[in-house]
Amino acid sequence: MKTAGGGTGKHTASRPPAPALRHSPRDAPVTASSSAPAYTASSPSNETAMARFQYVTQIEIDPGVVRLLPQECKAAGITKPLVVTDAGVRAAGVLDIALAALAGVPHAVYDQTPGNPNEAAVRAATAVYRDNGCDGLIAVGGGSSIDLAKGVAIAATHDGPLANWATITGGAEKITGKASPLIAVPTTAGTGSEVARGAILIVDDGRKLGFHNWHLLPRVALLDPDLTMGLPPMLTAATGMDAIAHCLETFMSAKVNPPADGIALDGLRRGWAHIERATRDGRTDREARWNMMSASMQGSLAFQKGLGCVHSLSHSLGGVNPKLHHGTLNAVFLPAVIRFNAGAESMRKDQRLNRMAHAMGLPDGRDYGDGAAVAQAVSDMTARLGLPAGLAAMGVGESLFEEIIDHALVDHCHATNPRLASRDDYRRMLVESM
Image 1 (cartoon, helix red, strand yellow):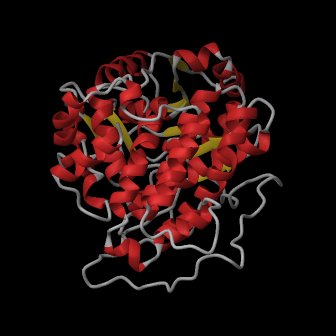
Image 2 (cartoon, rainbow, N blue to C red):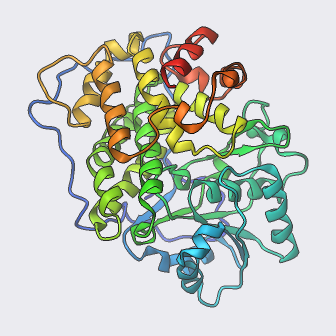
């Protein structure tokens, strides 16, 4: 999908005009009923700056689109890609499908992506990239593989430690068009990194940092729901809650971005309506897989608007304990953050909780403004999916709270929460999430 506003200007080979978002007949529109909560759209106040939004990457979504890899490599000017993946994707046979689609395109493979990608893995993959004379990247996997590939795109073309190029250090804006071109083939439906300009990586000092620059945006995202059909139920649930968290949290952000709000609400409708089906019947329910992949992509398209405390906390705790799954952490933190955000002026003014509740299919005819029912609905969904009920069930103790809070306060998502959280606020959220 290429939308108005132009491209990044970084394509090294010409590309014919892209069609609209390619989709299958199962993509039935999700429409609001006549009982949708009424609200009056408000204009931004003088104190709220309009967010900059830019939707420029090509998206192909349909069963079998992985077959487009050779032509997309040619379009991006990639003659020998490094395929970045993980051992699980290889063991599941999904990597073989992607490599078969590459046909005669020369390539190298790095298949040791860790669950939480780190700087050591970036160095190892970059060495494979350079040793094999690669000139581009294909990420085949979940958000970890896609983010690792973005790290390689930086490291292979920019000198110095990764922290030099992080968003919070001011380095991200210095990433140049030399960054290696990337094609993304997601095999999970959660992070949406395939359409995002950012990556989350653990640097050598243990911090989990964001790297955000339009030069890291994949040239094309090939969303093939067939590649997710074999995803195990608990991973389907955890990654699916990641997608739902993105849609919910970016919609709550006070930043003004009407297109992002619309995309987020539609993604929330799709994700909420299909996550249980995808978890329960994922090997046969192609419609549910398609809609979860769309929800994941939509959440990521929208969250350039900004996220908030859910991600400040999950980024921080994920850095403290990289074995914890990011999507599961988001699911656990969401209820406490929703209750906290309910007091924000922008949430009340724009009736955001009522609109969220409607997208989630909660009963009409009541006011959800205090956040309690929406938060409870998230908790109930998490329980139905079989995910951990709280941090204690994940082995997280109160002894980690101060370290988690330290990192959350300086995370790049902290400032875009609709209500600025203090140290005490974060501590309360952690207690409520136990």
